[in-house]
Length: 102
Image 1: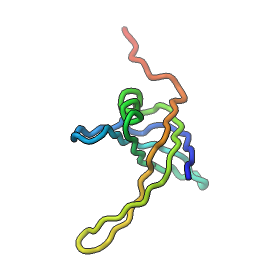
Image 2 (image 1 turned 30 degrees about the vertical axis):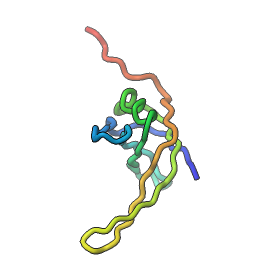
Image 3 (image 1 turned 135 degrees about the horizontal axis):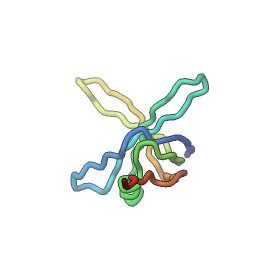
């Protein structure tokens, strides 16, 4: 199942260079139903990760179409479960910020 979240980027993307396929991580902020702000970590892979790492910056408005991926791992003998938001598409809803020349 996919859903779309509209809001603004709260971090510049991080793109680790570890020899695997391109991937990029960033966070967005969105308002919850009670007025609380939620910060959501988003992961992108492949060509989308490359585009995000080149174009996304803090404050840009984006629409993220994504799915929730569940994972588990064992830590200190106990199984831990966690969720990841994996983007299928990121649409930029505003123009890139330009540095003004003085």
